[in-house]
Length: 96
Image (cartoon, rainbow, N blue to C red; front, side, top):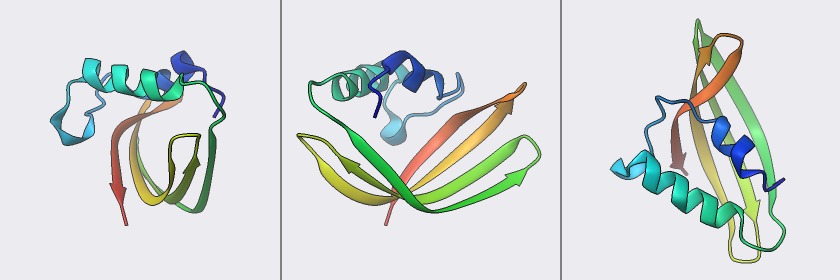
């Protein structure tokens, strides 16, 4: 929601696989266009559940996203991997 695209993209690891088989470059262009659009973005989450197994973690939650162009609520699963002292997103799935 802070619209800092560099910080946003830095949360995704070099091993991130965009959903739907898109290339990383195409995915970054789409996200940059969405995040940097004029207007406010609000993101809230609820029902967060995290499981950690060594250097891998799975986070499941419901995300509420609101902007001038989109209003959605959906389940989300993030698979994260630890790189040194930092956790980064490796996979992202949207579900019910």
